[in-house]
Image (tube, rainbow, N blue to C red; front, side):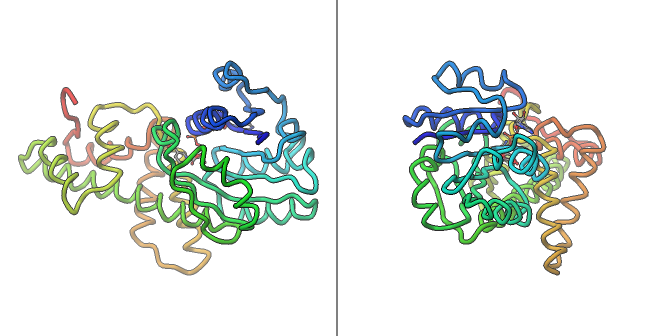
Length: 298
Ligand code: NAD
């Protein structure tokens, strides 16, 4: 297929790489041209504006930080919608608000442009390996049409329902993942302060009922190694938890624990840690408990 791809960051760049490797012809755009250097070397074309990613392409994808950037790139000046018309398909791979993507869907529908939400999970390693989970919302016939391109980026592609359904699933998933991180930091600082080696705690819990992706992937590969390079930036994690708790407020769903998780992420942002990997949220617990969660030589 001929495709446009906007947002070539930690996730977007390796996803675009996999689209090119799968034989798709890709036109790319980002605020920072240097973020597309490897893609241009692989044969991608460069577009100077979001609007310029549209002509000749069946589908345009975005992988952007959040609602504000998606609105600007799609609906703003020289945005995707200005270049799109009847029959165009736009797919948001970002983690966005369900209401925001529904609004974009409605505005684009007036011009005959189909909009799908397809947020992803699996981190930078999953994006590079092409093993992401994709949670897709929107028209099912459009889903069937773009399935080959989605399959080049992920190995678990699931149709979730009407527009916004993918974002809802993704927010539920990330709320649990970030919440796991906060609880894990408490349990692990407790275990270490009580005298057990962190490597032992991590090994046993990774193979017991306390296991989670947050432990076996994020904590083992980043926190325990003292590696704070994103990965998944704290600013993005805080955005996801806030989108989830906002949705809870809107729908009248009590979310006591989730709001504590939200505040822990706000505190990390106030420390100026937004650009570091989201495992740094555990540093707050380390400070309070007086325990560092590092495994030498890991
Ligand atoms: P990132 O910050 O690394 O990349 C975002 C890219 O968008 C950057 O290259 C930036 O220059 C570009 N951008 C921002 N505003 C733009 C604009 N107006 N026009 C053009 N380009 C613009 O973020 P990421 O980690 O790649 O995450 C992207 C999305 O995927 C986010 O919504 C995030 O929540 C979600 N996500 C991230 C991960 C992860 O592990 N990093 C995992 C799953 C989902």
